[in-house]
Length: 186
View (cartoon, rainbow, N blue to C red):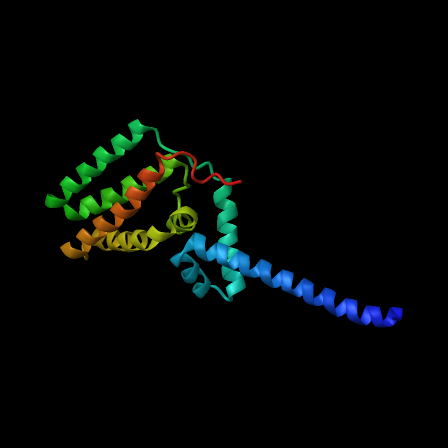
């Protein structure tokens, strides 16, 4: 066989193999992001200009999250937060709007103690979505009702729902706070 014939065979094979390798890599990255971010994957991709832009945003979140110093809580802090939550729930009976606002502050305090930045709600969502994507809709819904409650426009049922939503994230952050360095990956 001549050199030209060999090149005519080898070059297309190499190109096909390279294209397959790229396709497999992209597929594996996408699957990783879908598994890690769950419903947050779809939400982010739908809100982006393209699927690649959405996935780039999610990888950026992972990178930022990996740089954070997220730490478990000592048992004394977990017990204190549990007591504080019980107090917020008791407050709901007489002062539901204030209880929802206090629940928001308690969740924010817990996030801060765990090591999450808490200056900006949208950034909180992005940071939390890396490890707590399944509770982000709870947090969004609760935060929205808290804003309505601050303006005295939330119904008692909405306020009750907000407490349930805050509790979902609170429980996850509190439980995750006692199990060691879940965020650490090889």
